[in-house]
Length: 245
Length: 318
Image 1 (cartoon, rainbow over the protein chains, first blue to last red):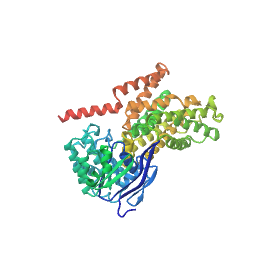
Image 2 (cartoon, each protein chain N blue to C red; image 1 turned 90 degrees about the vertical axis):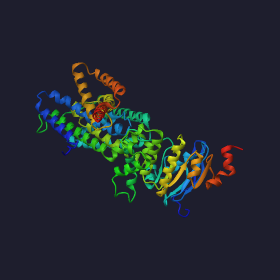
Image 3 (cartoon, rainbow over the protein chains, first blue to last red; image 1 turned 30 degrees about the vertical axis):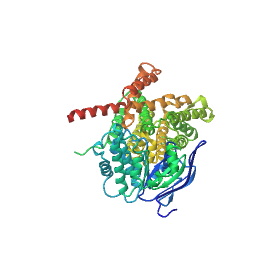
Image 4 (cartoon, rainbow over the protein chains, first blue to last red; image 1 turned 120 degrees about the vertical axis):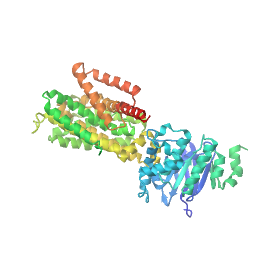
């Protein structure tokens, strides 16, 4: 294991029937790092997120997180250890109020981590988080009635409520306006300032360039670049994958 | 003013029902009341899995019949006290729930429902071919002599079912209000999101299936003594599967009181209809009510009540 890596996944493979979605992908994240993950449609970004978060199992490969092998753990245990993801299409608990949405990870994930038992009650923590993402007035509204951008914020707040060490934000900004994109970026930067490492999966290049310290490019299930955003953008292979010859 | 905790009400209601059973002179009411209470157990039990977590179980009759046939086996062996039969029925039914859960809970939506329906059919076929318990001919179950302190054995069965109903309602309430109920609600809304929020979805579903199955099995255990003649068609009756879904649906699935309201209402209507019109009409009534509730009030009577309260609240706020 590399010195000081928070997450280190090596040669992750995933096939769906005859289709190779991920072909020996390596990915490492240091504590508190901001990583951008980009790639054309169908390149395996979401599959990688699913394999890392445990939503689906990888066929081969090892995943080390915080010094533990986690590739065989079910998703809820990975969440409890501190790998928390958001979904590309927000999946709120629609029958619950906004604040009750946050109570789920607070009760089921954050509680299982040391050092979270004291202090504010869970309800206070939930309200504080809603304050942070700007959804405080919506606390008692049904989550099904939120707007798109509000749902994305709820999705982020719910992930943060699980007290992640690593947050995987899967296309948190798809379909949002420019102003809203900026709002979400500053929110993610704020979370990163609190020490949370973030993998951002995104199609919006502007957001990736502004946000990430390191950018990883997946094409057809293979990692073709892994470097600072500027270097990656000038990589001929990357340019070819995005723009063609 | 201190708030009266809501668990008091089921106990008060049970006490009143008990007193009423001692006051009435016509034993038919006690006989009919047993069926209503039996449905309170079945509906509350079904709702723990079906209502809270959204996994629709069509196999209630299977769990009920496990309890009923468990009693038949014990009756043939050494006629233990009924309380012991009920306890054992609960244990066996929860184990069947455990196995069913591991085999089927990875299935979602309609596939789970079909698998549970299959469970009932498979078990019925097994019992049909099991000569020890009478096979298709059924089994005559002699009621033991009357129990001290009860006017008749039917009274005794009534009180046993009353206690079971109380237990089922209190268990369903406790689960709903605990973190388990909260986790099951998350599963119902979105299972993947729940899992990724740290909810141990498989474990909670297995737990819900076991508790639900155990209560259904316990409800079935006194049945052979109640009906005195048990055959596969009555133990695996379609009515159990349909009613234990229809009752929570009509009463309201998101609150623990919903199945109780639905069970009392529907079972009473069925009992009255059986006596006054015909027993064949029952399922038609259930069907009619079910269709009207699904289209007009999908959240059941509890949902209607909450809507009304919200509207009143809004008016008062203005």
